[in-house]
Image (tube, rainbow, N blue to C red; front, side, top):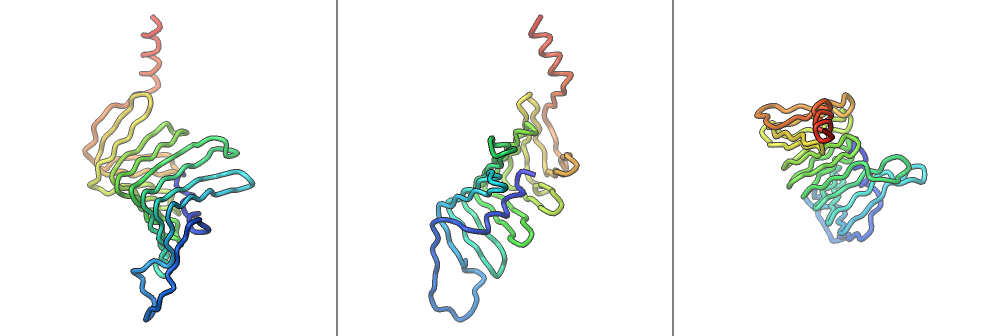
Length: 189
């Protein structure tokens, strides 16, 4: 899915600062690496696959977590020629060993290939399962360019099955292809 590549944030970044001060042993509350104004482009077969940016990144080796602030990403389509998906969050936490990602502080994801925009306060991506979800009490807004617009509480999308659902409190408008064709016919008359 569109967030699969976030695990790539684990490698080389520009603008790093290290603290080599004396310690009495490992301190899992202190980052091992702090980076600012991070930009990372993942390349596969000479083509860009994804671009990640963050104002600040902290890597915690013992906990195997990367914390990011003012996080944004772009996923490129075939041959790296166009952006297929993009997103941003006030903050994100990447579990290095699983590639699972928790985003918060206002999340917006746009997926061009699905013509869908997802907006909420927080989302979680489970990489192995390819599941994107919000908390059961979190309000989520889903919209499409055809006028479809839903608001609901809780959210779960299965990228493999290409399905999504709300847990409750759903309201909004769904525009089907038949509705679009009818609108087009009325506009032509």
